[in-house]
Length: 467
Image 1 (cartoon, rainbow, N blue to C red):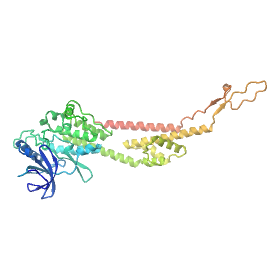
Image 2: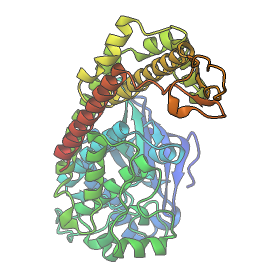
Image 3: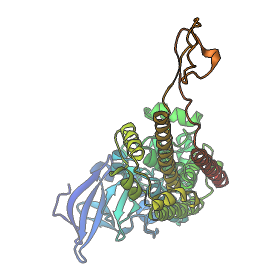
Image 4: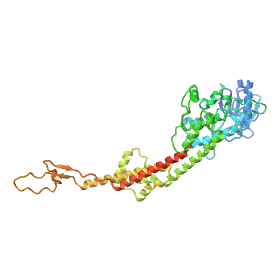
């Protein structure tokens, strides 16, 4: 029987709409009529339902997944047989956006990626504890379920090529595959997320293969690209077998970002022995990184509250610092300062004491802005002083003494500066520019010390944060 909306399965589950289909089965959204609970209904296609081997694996999937209790894995509700539809695996229906849609539209932030990794590692912990290897963890098999606190939880929803790595009751052989509901070609994974050893021997894959897939998912989410770029499946598999993973590109260089980079690269190690020993070990590493990221966010917020540079810049320029023409902005500031518009004592004190703040990203930005403003002011003061001195001391003109004649020579011109400069032509000299004021030298020295000290402190912090 072909399912259609409104059909009743086993007298308890009403069919609503189709949400997915593969070469061996379909997934429908439905409702448990007695309780009004939404469910997902997995069924076999007629051709698959006639294959005893596929039917046996379908039953095995229901049995294995029925043992899993996890907040990060879609739960099995029931496994029923309908006289017209056949076997139906009833699972929890998860409302949410597929992770595949998210990563196709944008890159995730460092913080989002860490949270995503914690959720997926938690799900893998529960799967591996039940001795089940997923083998096809990828963005298509993950839904982001909205939570009450505004965040979204990652839920693993498909086990099409999962397998058990332990001998089950009834004498089932170790490593027997589960039902492959969504892959007509009986593939055991997706190339971009498969571990190298899984490409060679998918039946022997262990939990280390799921850890590799998790690393590939986080790489894709935060970078916007696959580990080995855009290649066809054959070339991608060859590259994965012979080359180390491409380093994860970063747009940030704080401790949280570098820690995530190290965790992802470890999960993507070619050899299973070089990866995290367990999903729990990777989860613990990501939990530490989340604490680091939250600590950095608190530091940035504190510095922003304590150093309201926007107000100072508004006082100086009368507008936002975010100018599209920095040269014009600098010229305007120099002009205003030259005309006598200087920093207030309070503004100068707040700018010059920013160096006392903790070395965070916001402090660095504030110091750069403060340094620029102080240098502009010093430059304007110097130019104004030179201009005033040039106006106060006119250019000196040196003329030659009068030629010797029989008559008494007239007294030497007071405008002659030195006898050796006498001659038939007038020599002009310009008053040399005044040396830089002592105030500018002090400001430059102070700023140099601040910048050098900050960079040394930041470099030391990064070095200590490296694993």
